[in-house]
Length: 333
Image 1 (cartoon, rainbow, N blue to C red):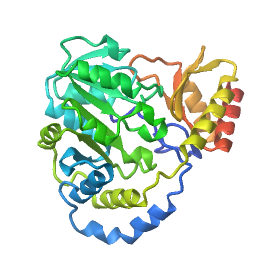
Image 2 (tube, rainbow, N blue to C red):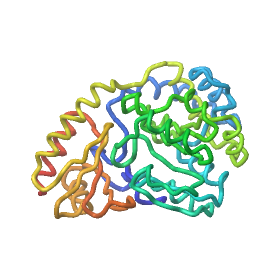
Image 3 (tube, rainbow, N blue to C red):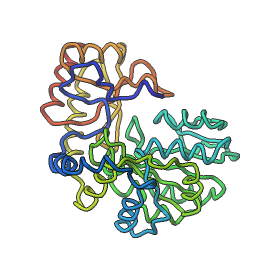
Image 4 (cartoon, one colour):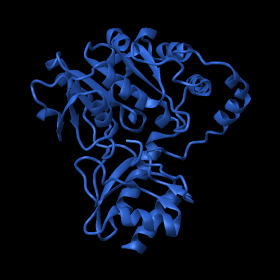
């Protein structure tokens, strides 16, 4: 789906962007300066498989480099996996990221949609699961997933952990834990963790047999040189550029403020973004009002399978920006 995602800022004057699940409170100035120094590297081809970055990720996670595949964002990984397992019977837990469905359709999968992992059919061959889930921030506890994966050894589980840095670790697998299973591929997003969506950088980890299967469909040079340099720089810094406890505390405060607005309800979440449902009005109308009158962008969630025209999603930003959004919505309602 080329159109219909968040962060659709093109042609708009936006001062506060709540529409993508990026936390903009991180200071990226050091990375910006580092990449400026490495601009001359764009005059040579990058490594065809980003091997140096894969090696560093494997070292940091204490897994062999054969268990890692670097990708142009988690989205490239989704399309590669759908291609490698073409024409399978895929179950997608909804509402969720639309690219799982789009990638499967392009590659001839038979698709089935369920609201819960426990509802999937016995003849399922692949399960696509976002954990924490986009757009609602819901999660499956890691212990539940471990039991379910073990009980279904003939099903491949594609677990998108793009937002793993924004929730409690009890919910997500480490890269090392994921490689213990012969039927699991985990997607990781440096784009989300480090607030660098324009770089497009992610990776998948899993059993080396599965990674080899997916790698066979990968085109060379899909990850550009500056993205490789950014990935290595960020990993060598050794820290995530935000405080999770502070971020989630502000999320809780923000949700209370939003829930106090007459005419909408806030849905529960386990991360820094959450869904809101308008009782009567349309999210598309609210989105346009906020753009035109306040330079604020939210995510109209009507095009998520299982949601409708009354839903929108926001991601926590600074306290000032959050308060400004609350005031603007109150004025509109």
